[in-house]
Length: 523
Ligand SMILES: Nc1ncnc2c1ncn2[C@@H]1O[C@H](COP(=O)(O)OP(=O)(O)OP(=O)(O)O)[C@@H](O)[C@H]1O
Image 1 (cartoon, protein in one colour):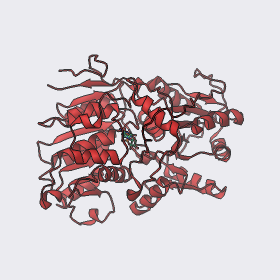
Image 2 (image 1 turned 90 degrees about the vertical axis):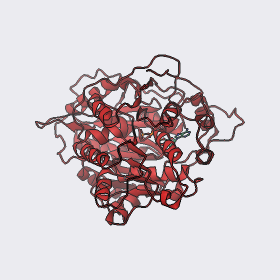
Image 3 (image 1 turned 180 degrees about the vertical axis):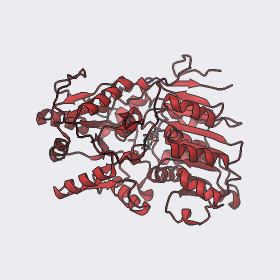
Image 4 (image 1 turned 30 degrees about the horizontal axis):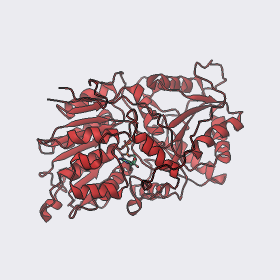
């Protein structure tokens, strides 16, 4: 049976693009040294300075301003950033009233059938209206008997709240014993994302007496033998697997399993295997929920096996880009020139917070050291650091103490820091396909740039290219998403500054998201 789309159309969307294996982990491959001499004629739109028209709207609403908070709010390590400008509120309201926008919904949270104490948590987060993914998936998630669900929507559109609200709704906290036995398990690919989700569950569930939430991530006290006694557990698959094996968690009462960033969790050799093992140790009749912004074709069959007979909300890959994120690329003469340009770039720009993605830990460290030596306040976070160190680094970035975070793909997914107004792809995201060959990695590109432009904000994504191979990969990514990237010459700093500053100064994009959500419902 097919469920109707928002506009009443029929629903049978699928993602269609063969993909190769995703080598998401940090790579130690040397950088390409190929020299890049501008010899490739670019078919990409080369625009003269394309200032983004930012509508300066005066407040016209008498409603109280929405002050959104990060996924992890201050008590849980978040920045507790509140947006001061009124036009932000007006534009979010505009976007949420536009049926073509992924932030749109026809319903209110009150109409979604959630318990009152959960609604209070939603209000505490200052969520005024559901987004499309929340409005569409929550009624399916809350069905009884429970149904599995595979949900896809653009980055920063509120998938976390969708699965967290379902979890909270399904908890029975009526006895101390129930409060201390895991009823819901969320698996995420990084400790930072797991901790962030713990923060969201705690804030949304702050009016639920007896709710206990714990992280199961590497090198934490809990992973070193202490028994986990919590109603909701959020962890990374390896640690969760070990803990269940060691009987540090009693999963008999589990009702819901969520895989966040599910395509990544199922695709990667290591994680996919671990997720399957974890699932095998759980009760058989649980609800399985998979969410991600991307579900490449080669993962869809794994997803459908993992979550059988799931209701589905899917998108075409042409509909995945968030148009509030302005994508530009800088054509650099050489690898060496890339670094000079990066430093000059940061010297020129006054940017809120930004993330620089690189391919290897070594590059992250090298850039951190050089930028620090030049007086920039930067931090780096890679898989090379110990868990506790990683927590300190990400928290200092969330709180705005460090404005620039240099990282690898380890933080490409899920991390929600609303103040991030720029993402730099210092290295074009690629993946290893064997035989010494690397190809473009569109999914990682999309997740990386999705660290900005959260829930209707605007952001800039800048990709550096320094050789022909980079350029070809970037063009492949552009084709895949049917998106437009603007080439900005590195000798025209005025243009570059003007383009980037205009976008960063504005608080939100206009209502210009692409949207093509499709729903598919199992009988
Ligand atoms: N209904 C809502 N109203 C206002 N803000 C919201 C709403 N739902 C979510 N948000 C905020 O939007 C931001 C993005 O949400 P979230 O991190 O869940 O996105 P996502 O879809 O999971 O993104 P990604 O694909 O990058 O993981 C968060 O800061 C969250 O607090």
